[in-house]
Length: 81
Image (cartoon, rainbow, N blue to C red; front, side, top):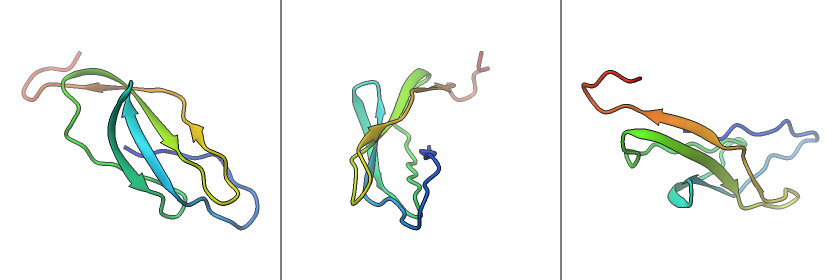
């Protein structure tokens, strides 16, 4: 998963941590690198998941939460519908 950001004007790049959540459950956290945060997880069971990225804020950047992404996960060896 990755958390796409919004265009930033000026020369600074946000830093800090992004926490990825499935509803209220934390999937994990990732440190921003070049303004992007990426998380690889095997924690999502088959089904639909409401995933958000929560940025804690940093020098010159406000905390924010992304729009919800509905991520569908299919069971292994099962057709996904």
